[in-house]
Length: 359
Image (cartoon, rainbow, N blue to C red):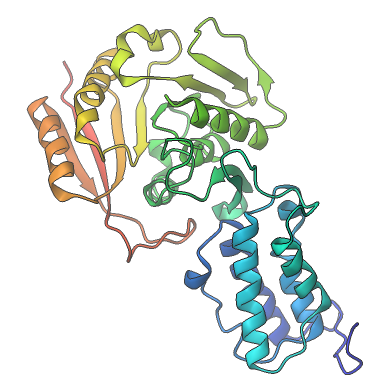
């Protein structure tokens, strides 16, 4: 029940303070939708004063009761953790909780709930990334675990978010280009490029069956009106035309790049990748792939690589291989986390532009 002493508010009578609250709610909502760890959410003073019944309802409306979340829910565990934090904050101020607060929290904890929560097969749920400059939202089905179904490719990693920040600050390098993404995972960087930069063609690639399945679902989810295009290449499992961009999903095993018939689909101007330099046993195949793709473009393409430096020796080993193969490496400044939330204090992200002298 709604407390009798709750202050009624209307849009017409919204005060300047309420407008500030609206701005705060938008900031919190953006972080919630993309699943920022609850301990890392920046609340911007939301709990510095008591929240009225209506203000609690407004917070629920832009988070756990957001229409997008209702249709494509974040993990139940994450939503429960989010609500538990809010309930604890309100309890510490002796504020009566909105009925919907506990209703939602209990629903997240109840086995067999009718809410369309996690995919029980490999723990998949959704995250929603609000794009800069009002460019819309990317919704991705992904895993909350580091390793799911034997692969690390079922979640969006920090370097992919840093790559998106870099892309947003270097529009001319990507707009209207032919783009190939290596190790696309669930598709954050590739879908962002396809949505906002109108490449002539973008091919998103990976080689794990579960990752490719999730990637195709995510491309279809974010481009529901794109028209299917026939393709003779058996490694291309999805090819869509959005009207501005041709988008492909390809099973691209670096060990067999020469047999991929990639050249029939795309001659890349730009290669992009995030978090693919972590296992030195993959370096020979990756280097062979880069050599093959650069030859397709007569060495006129460039490779933008974002990586998390987990082991400095491993990264240096790969960079030295590139130098030996006559590639040129330019380290780029890493853009601050403005639009795509990632924890720059917890990991060392590095971004490189890799080119080669024309033959």
